Length: 111
Length: 117
Image (cartoon, rainbow over all chains, first blue to last red; front, top):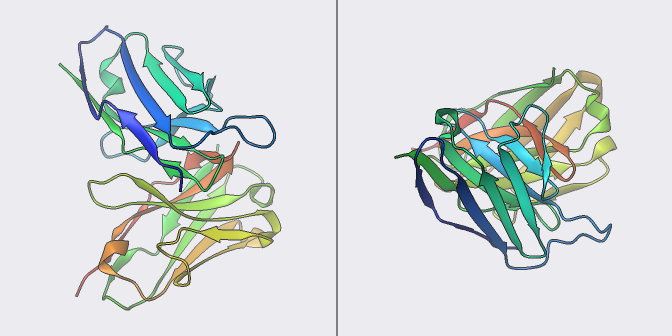
């Protein structure tokens, strides 16, 4: 299976400051159709996961534009331009190019 | 709006069986692949299984292959997961999810399965 490695695993951030999470895959995530199926999910405390970003950089409907995704091949990044209190939770990257696998999760907390 | 509601979780002894259900609404169920994803208490996410449209293709994580069976009833807008020979390590919240762009775009609230004697 493709291993997804996130860093950092714990991310304390001051309100209003930017945050960045890295995700690396053990294999290329470019699919045979030319797309890269790398996604980002947010799981707030006590809630189900919610998809934020699909195919590297596409925001899902209703996702604030302070969230952005980038990357290619085997290296990807989720950025939050200005962290708000509602952003607290665990963030997962996930690849759908091969048998689906998730990263370990990054816990974002407010300093 | 899209809604996915899981049911059927509970406490079961090792070696026992359980059948999970997921009722879908707010979209054309038959047009979408569907998935089961689980999360052990305090742990990360693990894809369990997915099923194609028309039930023509299914796939499973190695950890559940041969013990779990995914199925769907498009007439009832429902997804199922039959779980046999349950083990302690199967203890988790099980989420039903719709697959869009090769990833889960909508998730249910989850149902807890506890395997313990």
